[in-house]
Length: 201
Image (tube, rainbow, N blue to C red):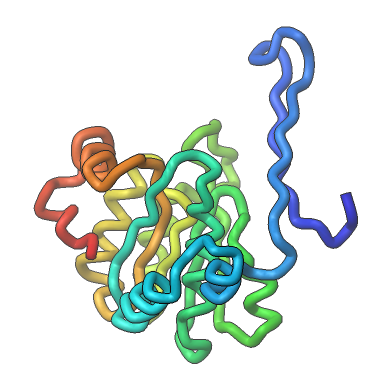
């Protein structure tokens, strides 16, 4: 793989993989996805792009739902390009995948935060996703972008949606195959009250 390539590598070994090592590679674009690129590749209609741009400009709260490898992170990354450069953006991820370095090179005011994974044991030096989200509320006026909502950090995310980031875009990705699937996961599995779920625009 070329030095300039952005690739996420996952590895499992014994005792989880009893027959030896298993690898997974996910290659990322060197340049951020944008709405025009999605349109050019027939992955989005101009009407959809216009509607999403309107919602982002209106500082809505959004969850991007889909199954594994459906393009949730790519679409979330394209949202960042739509936020005006004068506004600060804070991204929170346990695995750094959003194109924060590329956007910073283009003049965007973006601050990435790396948090502990909800899927692995937390190292002592790592901050939980919940604490990372709550910390952003103390950083002042910023758009909040959460790489993936998996667990109890959703409680802090909905706090941000309701109070701390009311005048800014708040967006994230979540696994779900339908709008009801997202509701079921957030309310029944994670435990967000129905009244708080209403903060999702």
